[in-house]
Length: 247
Length: 47
Length: 222
Image (cartoon, rainbow over all chains, first blue to last red; front, side, top):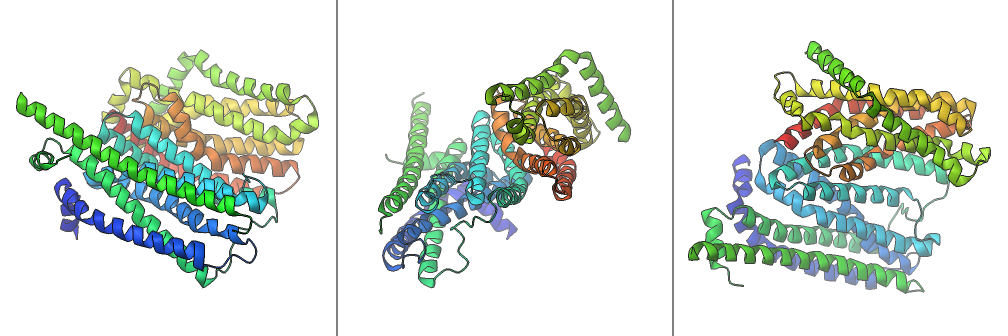
């Protein structure tokens, strides 16, 4: 296992394996998106309370899940980069940040688009939307820090520390926002609560969630692969690859 | 879409724009790096 | 180890004492920010007392942020920070001493000033004690968490604006619980839950942030 990690962690192997993986994940992503969209827009029934507007869920919920998942990736990859000095981990973290921020923006925007017909307002200080907003701030801070530091390795390590501090804070933020929300909004039940979900809605939701995840892996690998090639531009294998590329 | 069409479709459109945008940005990023590396290699060879 | 801690603490207190005028600035900022609110919202005591806890806490947050740069910046500029990082004493201990000293010279005066400002905002008498207690528990957390941000940005030329983006989101839990406690106290409710939570956040910050600060300094100084 450990040797395998080191092998995959070596830039050369990463570049080669990622190159083979990308077409597959891309193809599966497309298939899953088509199937998920078919389920989300056509076969799934409208919600008995929210009607057709519940179809926003198939975008909003996976985006919100991804926004948290990607932040975890930032922290985990950051920790791996800090502790074992694996270069790929640094590259993955850097490549993930803009994607994570996009997912957060998507979750916020769709939450707002969902909120308008449901609450009658574009923005409500709902616990989940507020947590998501704070998560966006954390992403922007991370990206601000890593772009402000010129040396790439220093930037990655500083970002890793920030992401770790953020990850420790996220549960605290989440809990405090929940507490604050129940305090100020009393018994206003948000209609986002869905205690039980119909199976015809659950399946497209899960398919969309997996599709989002694979999409993320595909794009992050494309980005990370290019970054690895750039970082290793002085090594022989990278030169070989560049020499063969035709644009 | 039961009167919610605007909200539903703009959600899906936004998702499409963001996901495609990220994909295109990643590919442009890759292309730029490759072009940069190729020109570096050429300069080294010619010198 | 303990002697190194005390020596570092005394050094920073002494340095702060030599630059007294700089210490006044965050405090003055705190006072001015708070006095802006009555001017913007009108002098009605009913309005002011409802927002008082929030205003005092937001102002404390900003004042803490403003003063934070001083923790490491001047030591970084004259090279002392590098010596500290290279010293054989555990860096976590030394940075903790520095942050503690910084809190003593910026946080404590802020707590002492707060009753005066709170009464200017017509805060309810019942909430005054809670306000001071939340500041006592909360401002060290602000100093500790903020120092992580300072340690990460100390090498950057224009770290000031970035620092606030890094640090302010992390301050939100403190703000929520502290301002919530003061509001509840003003309404005559029990506030033990919030105070306990603030206390545990303080404990968590004391145990974890020195590690993060030390790691961040090592990264920043390379």
